[in-house]
Structure formats: structure tokens, C-alpha cells
Amino acid sequence: QVQLVESGGGLVQAGGSLRLSCVASELTFSIYAMGWFRQAPGKEREFVAGISGSGGSTYYADSVKGRFTISRDNAKNTVYLQMNSLKPEDTAVYSCAASSSRYSRTYYYENTYNYWGQGTQVTVSS
Image 1: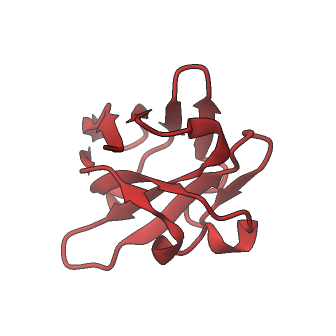
Image 2: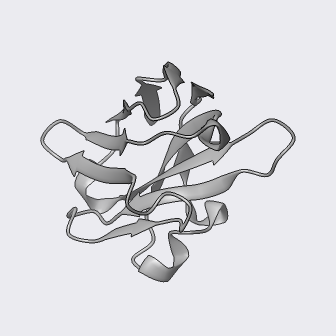
Image 3: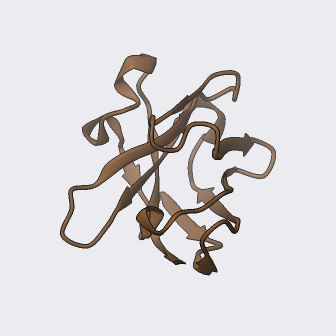
């Protein structure tokens, strides 16, 4: 049974940093693109960042470009999201997801993803 387990969320002041991790099990990790999505209270879930299976290509929402960095370590079946210069509007539950799609243009859309983690809460105080 495939499992994606996120960690690293928490409470941080505006301007601070957090690093999220997502460990995958029972998955041929390197053939899956990985994505991070977030959902704030009362809002739709939105794409944050994506990375190809090899790690050679990355994709970001405009709202996080230049502040967040997605990376992966295929030897550890882990994808990371380094979040810097955090803002109160970054407050949300962050979830990782795995996609078997080969088409990068689909990585922005949640229905592309086959497997999802439970999420980790990130709260940024002003």
C-alpha cells in the first residue's frame, strides 16, 4: 500500500523558514513526479511546487517563486519543500502528492496525482 507521509510543519513568524519533507513507501519513487499543494481554511487546494521524477525540472506557483524550493532525494524516497521568507498568507495545510504523468504541463493540476499524503499544518504569524 502506497503511503506518503509529510513532516516539518509548525508555527513560524513571518520572514522565517521551514523545511517540509515527504517520505514515500511502496512506490517506485523515481518514476513519479512529485508535487506540493496547500489548502488554507475556506479556500480551494492550490498547487505550490512540482518536480519531475529525475529532479531535473521544477515548477512553481507564481506566489512562491523565489521563496520556495522543491527538491528530491530518490535514494531516500523523499521530496522536500524549503520555504523561506514566509508570509501569513502561506498559512495552510501542505500536502505532497505523486503523479505517474509524463507531461509536465499537468503537474499543476491536482487531478493528475495518483497518491496523496495526509498533510502537515504550516502556520505563519504576523
